Amino acid sequence: MRPRAPRVIAACVAGLVATAVWEGLASAQPPDPALLARLAKQSDGFDALYKRATFKMQEVLDELDGDGKVASHKVAASHVVVQGDARHEIVDRCTKDGEDCTAKEQEEAREHEAKKKDDSEKLRSPFDTAEQPNYVFDQKEVDKTDASRVKIAFTPKNPDKHSVEGSAWVDTNTGTVISASVRMVKTPTFVDWVHVAVELAATTPLGPALSRMTIEGQGGFWFIVHKHFRVEITFSDYHL
Image (cartoon, rainbow, N blue to C red; front, side, top):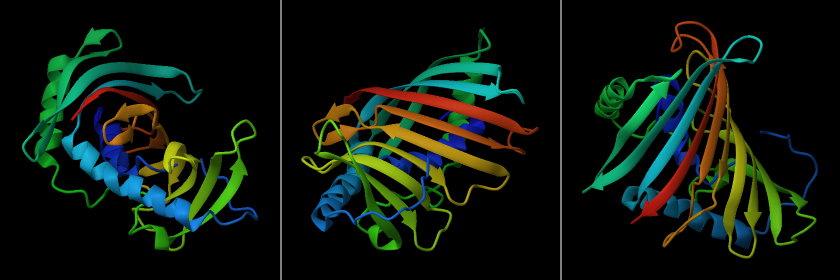
């Protein structure tokens, strides 16, 4: 996803769609094992969904100065197509600070796709069947207006570059994640911090899907100078 530095981070968090800023683990009761099993089923199914689905994306990137004011503003629209086993992001239009940059962004998207080799750097959802044994889960809260919605916090037992810590609101009736907020435990080189929040309000024949993702972080090197960035991506028009 665009632009270049956030694209690298967004690629990392692509595997995060079923996860969720860290609140620490106070005393709380463990979640129902049956609920965790249902969440694992949903999380495991995301790979199938995103391998088969086409969808649209609208991205807004703001680079912020030291006072938190917007120094640069980029807006881009794109769509994802599936061709056999391959998925391609097609940039439809892009502007930066009011100037058209579509051609440049299309070229950078093609270069990024050509360099993409595997998912070895991707964050992994703590709700995945294979990942759940690596995490500690606690049910922290019940929605006061809807007792079927609970907040589950998670923290890795042995953090690595694939780990996140955070919390997620889940629906105990459907066994699905509603929204989540996380931070990367071990950030990529030259990245100071990254926080990610997701909402799963889109519907598909295979279940809930990403509707909105926000990524905020700070780092250097990729940015030439030390920069603070904020990205908001909305997802729509899913087709299988």
